[in-house]
Length: 236
Ligand SMILES: [Zn+2]
Image 1 (cartoon, rainbow, N blue to C red):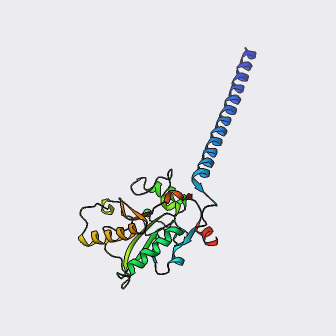
Image 2: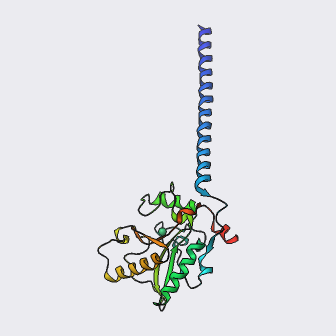
Image 3: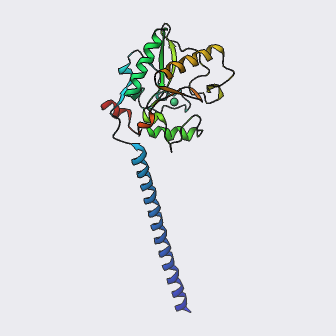
């Protein structure tokens, strides 16, 4: 009887050792697969250290432009400061077009105020966690055109007063008020919204249906998603 008990104990022990070994191997294999998948995604989608030579500092290129980089403050939909610096970088070709927009608006006593430009890819995950609605935040699986340095959020200001012109909603209002076809906007807001859309469209940008402030630079597909910090860009 004692011998049988010893054999059973031995078998049990061996089976525990095998199970542990098998599951740790399985875990290692899953971990490896996840790491590889992440690496593949990063290699094909997110450029870490290249393809950002033509990202330029908009304020340096267009000194008259006003910046109000909301994600560098807590005055945004997250209620938190998510950018390390209040700066706006965009692709050079887009900045050249924004110069023309700014010049044209000046003739009417108006100018641009920018809320957001290039957004490091990692920030997209933070936004998606807080607002997983593709109408207002791009799924990190696809990335945002902001992550490519090829989208800009902006509004119009009066050059005389520096005040923002009336628009259909405040920036980052994730309701139907921000939609371009919102039918209850005031006539003044509708006129200003259309003026902004017309001048941006004329110079190579395309408006977005759900956010009156968001414009994609035409040809954005040519630019890769980037996960480069503002500090790296400033040192570039
Ligand atoms: Zn935007």
